[in-house]
Amino acid sequence: VRIDEPQQENPLAELTYVMPNPASGQVTIASSFGLRSVDIYSMTGTLVTRKDLSGYAQQMDISALPSGTYLLVITTPAGPVTKKLMVQ
Image 1 (cartoon, rainbow, N blue to C red):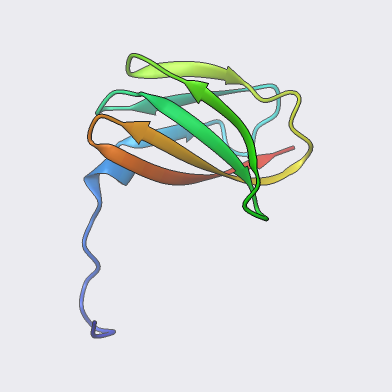
Image 2: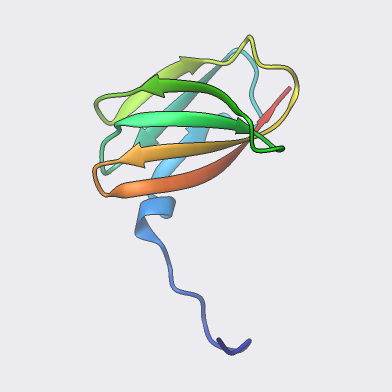
């Protein structure tokens, strides 16, 4: 890969959202491709929680998560996408 080459856009990542971010209490996970599940990992790679999802948008209670940064692996029918979430 050359440094001056434009990076490929990833429509899956661009059309999958975690909001608000940073958050406390609840977040909304949404994807134009639909939702199947979300795995939440700590920054050390430990699986913190997993939740099955359905539809195109769903709220998730994150009030039990300690403050910090987490990686969300959101599985959609089109494939997985990873998003970063900051919990306050």
